[in-house]
Amino acid sequence: MEITAAVLLISFLLLLALNVPISVSIGIATLLTMLITIDVVPALITMAQRMASGIDSFALLAIPFFIFSGLLMGSGGIARRIIDFARVLVGMLPGGLAFVNIISCTLFGSISGSAVAATSAIGGFMIPSMTKEGYDKNFNTAVTVASSTTGLLIPPSNILIVYSLASGGVSIAALFIAGYLPGLLVALGLMLVCGIWAKAKGYPVGKVTPWREALRKTLDAIPSLFLVVVVIGGIISGIFTATEASAIAVLYSLLLSVLVYREVKVSQLPELLVKAVETTAIVMFLIAASSAMSWILSYENIPQTISEALITISENPLLILLTINLVLLVVGAFMDMTPAVLIFTPIFLPVAVELGMSPLQFGIVMILNLCIGLCTPPVGSVLFVGASISKTSITQLVRPLLPMYAVMFLVLILVTYVPAISEYLPRALGLID
Figure: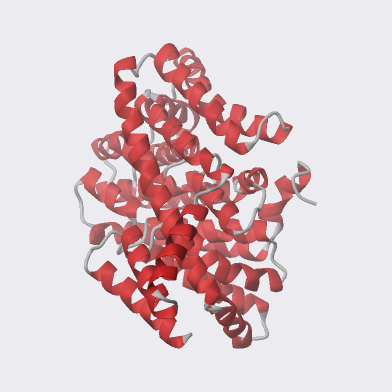
C-alpha cells in the first residue's frame, strides 16, 4: 500500500507542477497507480469502467441544466437588477456599497450556482463603481472574492450535488436547505468586517433611494429572485426532484432572459449552449477521473488507513475535527472543489460519522472549507478572477482578505461544532429525522 500511495501522490504532484490540467493529472496518476497494482489490460478496463460508472448517475443530470441556467442568468441582465435591489436595501448605510457588493454576490451566486460567475458579473460592475466612490480597489476586490463563494452554500449548488454522489446518497434536497444558514452566516460575518473597515477608513455613505425608484427596482428584481423560490419550493413540497428542478430552472431562466427582460437574443442561445457544453464536459471529466482515483484509493484501503491514523491522533473528537478542517483548508488552497469533494469525502466522512457528525453536516463543513480555498492563494480560482477584473496582484489582495478569512474560519468552526446550524432547517421541514 505504501508504494501505491507514493506513486499516486508523487505522480499527481509532479503533473500539477508541470501545469498539466488537474483532471488529466488525476487520470494519469490513477492509471499509473493501477498499472503497478494490477496487470495492464485489467488496469485499462478498470479505469474505463470506473470513469464511466462515476458519471452514470441520474442526479448528475442536474449539473448541465444548472450550468446553462446560470449562463442565461449571467447574460440576461440579472446581475444589474440584483445590484440595484441591494442598493435599495443597504446602500444608504456607512460603507453601504460594500454591503451592496456582498448581498449582490450572495444572491447572484445562489441563483447562478457559480462563484466565478458571481465574481465576474458582480465584480465587473461593483469593483469600478466602489473605486469611483472612493473605496480602495484592493478592498473592493477582496469583498467581491470572499462574498462570491457564499452562493455555493446557498442553493441551487452543483457542488452539493457532487457531494451527494460522493457520500453515497445524502439527500440533495436536505443538502440544499442545510446550506442556507451557514451561507447567510458567512455573508453577515463579511458585512460586519466591511462595516468596521468602512468606518475605520471613513468610506462614504450612500444616498437613500427615493421610494418610487426603490419600488421600481424592487419589482424589477423580483422575477430574478423568484427562481430560488420556484426551485427550492418545488423540491421541498415534493412537486419535483432536484434533477427535475434543474430543468425547471432552465425553462424559467430562458423565459425571463429572452421574453421578460429581453436581454438575451435567440441568436445568442447557440453560443450559450456551447459554453454550457464546454463547462459540463470539464466538470464531468473531473468527476470521472476523480471517481477512478477514489476507487484505487478504496482498493488499496488508503481511506481506512488514514481514518484509523486520524482517530489514533487523539481521543478528543474536537481536536480530530479541527485537524480534518485544517487538512481540507490546505487541500482547498491547491485543488479544485469537484475533485477535492470526490477524493476526500470517502477518506474523511467515515471518521466524521464515527465521531458523531451526520453526513449532512459534514457535507456543509467540507463545502465551506473548500469555499475558503477558492479565495485563497496560490490556486484559488475566484481570487484570480477578481484580481484580473480589478487589474491588481494577488499579494495586494491578501491584506484586506485576512479579516474576511478570519470570519469565514469562525463560521466554519461554528458549523463544525454546532450541528443545529446545518440540520435545523432540514429537520424542521421534515427532510431528515
